[in-house]
Image 1 (cartoon, helix red, strand yellow):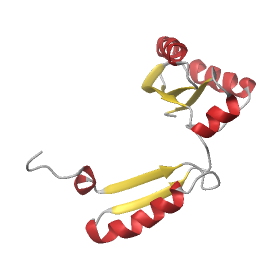
Image 2: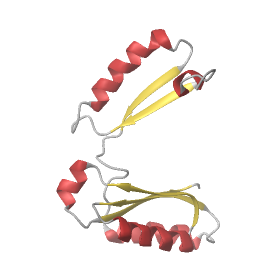
Image 3: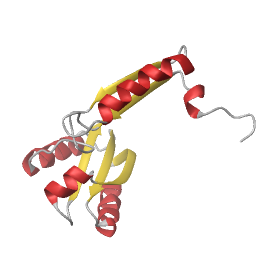
Image 4: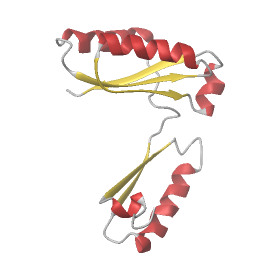
Length: 136
């Protein structure tokens, strides 16, 4: 677009969260890109964070996830939650789970994503997952 700047030049800060550095070179590449960007983007703070995970959240037992979900719901249902519904090649099931989550929780954010290749390999086709955190 004429007259528009790339998003990176409109930002005051940039945060890049990468897949675990033990699984990929993305973290190392991002650190190199950060150094190169310092000359093109002076005055912009750039941080690179190693997530130490392979997907939107680390795995927890079903009991712990159920307990946390219940605690959020027990706070009156008014607390906002941020939820990722993840799937391994089961988009329709993910859509149904997203709809159920939306009906039971006050979602500030609710999105669907595919599992990373590492998680897809580890969990196999047909896996669904939820990752969430509350605002409080």
